[in-house]
Length: 441
Image 1 (cartoon, helix red, strand yellow):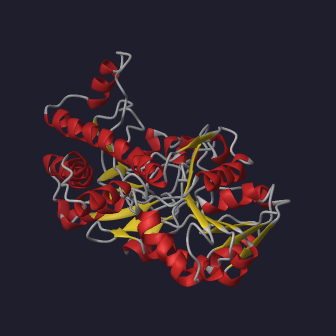
Image 2: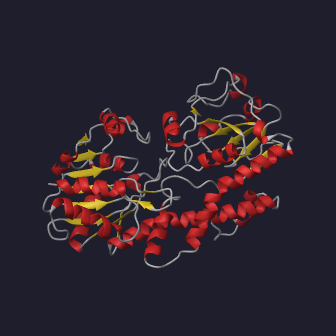
Image 3: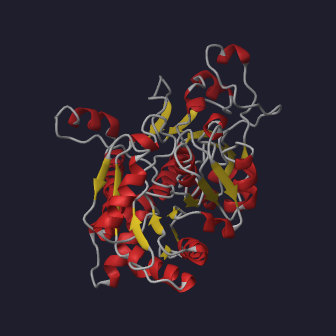
């Protein structure tokens, strides 16, 4: 009989726990009591899952680590971030390992899903399990690694439809891990030959994407300076079958902008200075500064004093149609604008205003300025209520491509503007649409 525990019930752990709870008894553990309280009511704190996802599942939500002792197959999927020096922060991972280790029994299996550098599971996490369980890894208990691959906001390629990499400390453990995951993963399994291979595979998935986007961002900067339409260039180049249509843009969030630093950290520890990976990170981290400078330049060209301008920033989450604000580069853009003296108003229907204020010290509104009903007929901005007394803005920045923003007519944006609409469309939502004062990345 297998009972599964899942430690860390975020956008990765919660859907995993609920999916397993269709087949096994599950203990869902998270140290955040307020999150546990919501899940007990059938509410996903990350707003990714509907209430129906909780129905009929054999799962116990708890913030009491002693409940982990009820399980014999433990999965750890807590966030792995970086500190202000871009050094991997393993504290949540090691803390979770300690909690599981204290409840570990002979014969148990522990599987890590968090993104780490190659060697982290065996060199950093397993010793913590041994220390707090007084058990010997590979003899008294076994362990493995199966990296998460969930994409927040993707309603098509969900957990069960993404091929899963699995690995264990020996062939027998690998087989057991594969059997457990095989009960829920429809897309199939890939058996990695070692835990380090599985760790490396995960960390380079996002590193590769980061580098490809950094190339497009650098090209966008070059082409913008040359007054060439970057999107037109991509469309033209994309007519060749082997050209990959990566798009320029702000690279934030808890994966793509973080994972490369894990590989950089490990490379430096073994005496290698990674050149390409580090350069890609530098380009992507510079982009908010470049965009802010271009916005200020355009304001000055219009005869506006940046210190006397009011700008509306639409969207602060790290990607469209999600609530997650972790490491969103929109906040870096806002800070750059404020450093130029620009007065910034922020709106986002998906972001939690209290969380934004706590994490970034930014006032974020869930409401749009007052809408003219005649202008929005045929569109559906219903998730947003509206300010009764709107400000007028010198410029509007469409920073995140939320669907609700796409549905706002250009005429409505014009109504929010002091004079002729001046639109900075980072994601190219409006594609110009006859706007005279229009800039996109």
